[in-house]
Length: 255
Picture (tube, rainbow, N blue to C red):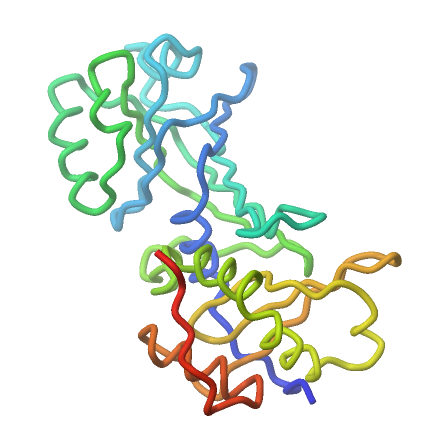
């Protein structure tokens, strides 16, 4: 039976994980078309460093000398690692003030970002790509359960899930190579939710989420681990225990 109390990441942790996973965020200011960023990175000082094409309208506006900053919104989409009928797991909106980065500071800031988040777009800074700074004032996340604001201080002190980089390979491995384990997990669902195609939706240190796709719509269910896990071996063991198969061979995601 599913636990009545679902243990999972805090909202701030979910946002940090979504920020780490999301690609191609959309940056918008009033009166212009949104621009797809080439890079985004949330720093501990409360700013998001974004890279945009040097000839974009946002870059032109942000660099106007008469402006200290303009209100802007960065929208991030957290997509499902597997090809599901509905591919969006959550949306995150980071609102704040967009400011330019002086040319002499672009390379030092790019180097500082590279230490925490190596990304190919950083190689193009100064060569058709520039950096901008979004000073965050508010954050909101929305998913199948609704929308929720996130305190900025909580967001900055939270960390992304330790498995965010491995999640895609883990779920693909489960979906392709271990359908029997998914079947075992499905036995923990109420009978009314077993009528449809059951796929792994997400996994983190606190548990696994399943998506049930049926002719009547989609349902997401979370199955929590008995306790949070911190490494791949513990994650594999927790999954097998949750499925009622503690003596199966350990699961390892393919590289």
